[in-house]
Length: 160
Image 1 (spheres, helix red, strand yellow):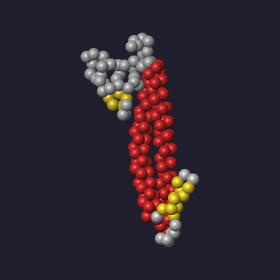
Image 2 (tube, rainbow, N blue to C red):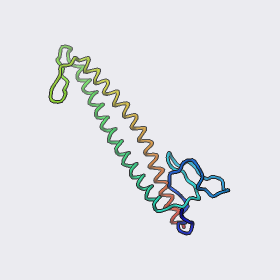
Image 3 (cartoon, one colour):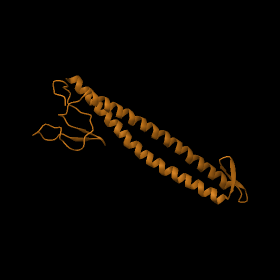
Image 4 (cartoon, rainbow, N blue to C red):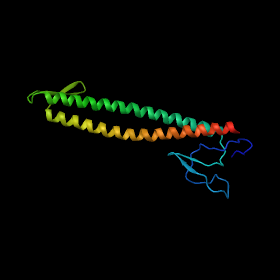
């Protein structure tokens, strides 16, 4: 553990459980929730290693947000494609022969079977999009909290 003379900064980006073991004895706990992952204790010194770990974690979380965006876009295209295909199939006469592409071949399917497959594809895409949007919101909050902690660390370093 670093002493106050080595590192005068007092804000820590480290991830802690809800314990206050790092606070000075006899002082009331100043641990408070800082988003889904971070806690703050005013008596924990900040090391350069902790600062770089927080930066790495923030960059990793930002990449996960971008990946969630890409997955949401791809699932939205799948949903639109299934919806448009379903709309086109419903305009066809009932005696029209419909084929489903499977690999390099095509299989004759009834219109009802293809409609149920398209409806199922739309439902699963909608469910996955909702899950990814929730995950994205959580990750965005994590990034915001990490940015706040880094900003706070930099401001406290400049003050000392």
